[in-house]
Amino acid sequence: MDTSITCYARSGFLSKVSSQGTTAALASPSSVYGAFSPIRSLKPSLFFGESLRVMSKSLKVSKTKSAPSLVIKAEIGDSLEEFLTKATTDKGLIRVMMCMGEALRTIAFKVRTASCGGTACVNSFGDEQLAVDMLANQLLFDALTYSHFCKYACSEEVPELQDMGGPVEGGFSVAFDPLDGSSIVDTNFTVGTIFGVWPGDKLTGVTGRDQVAAAMGIYGPRTTYVIALKDMPGTHEFLLLDEGKWQHVKDTTEINEGKMFSPGNLRATFDSPNYQKLIDYYIKEKYTLRYTGGMVPDVNQIIVKEKGVFTNVISPSAKAKLRLLFEVAPLGLLVEKAGGYSSDGYKSVLDKVITSLDERTQVAYGSKNEIIRFEETMYGTSRLKAGEPVGAVV
Image (cartoon, rainbow, N blue to C red; front, side):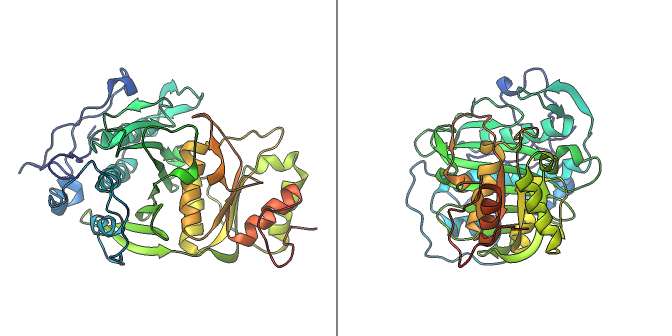
């Protein structure tokens, strides 16, 4: 199966494709996959367009980081490379984000054609791994290996630190969920990739607020790459065009109030009266239900529509499933950079210290008043200030 990406770092972002449209397969770390390695070589020009055979080689990468500069304003219509070059002077970060973009581009195609069958194995968390999960997983590890600026990487499918060979000083560590919502691929629902980028060589003992970037890839009717950079305002959406280029199409800087809700883990209402009260409030107030069962599309719609709330609550019988490192913290940065808020019930998820790779949490994302309502209803008080209480009193 053709699955490799075309992100070869030392002579530019992409390796040059031959006139026959083939590239050399990228090696993946044997420690990551063992005997399971479905990767072969990619023929990107056959389905991504001639223009992506070679990317600009004008960007020289230095391993010396410098302070971000926002002198040049990024604009709608910019390519991904143009945007990143304007947004940051950290060439290592630019390379990581570009290489991950190439992996997302390939995953978008492969999600449409890959097997949805199980691989007859489970990860160390006990979750069944699907073939499409592992395919996306390896593409992302390949991208980080060939970025040459990733020191460690860790995924929800392979939840151990993998040495990608990059530097500690001036390098990054990346945690990702390769295919969030993979269980709904066969039903043709939208799914996506989530990742967070931390400076240096640590993915524990850090917080979500320490991220220098976070992003998600959304594979639906449109394929989009949504990015937040720590030192740049807003959350930014890039659309994958027919010719294979990422084009900047939207900035989100404010999440407004609006009656749209996405209630995850509703089984928790069985023994969480306060969560039941919150859901009853949404229904009584005639909120529009917009819930797919996929965290990526449900959170992405808050950013795109610039309103709404997503909740995933735990209870004594419904334990936490969402992982802080791989999902919750990266999405927290995306939502908060877009002007929204996040909460675990007591504080922003970006302020939670990641103590282990498997740490899990409940979460809510949304506008300010929706997060106040979530905290007040669930726990009686909110750390955020509002003109008057907005809890779901019924």
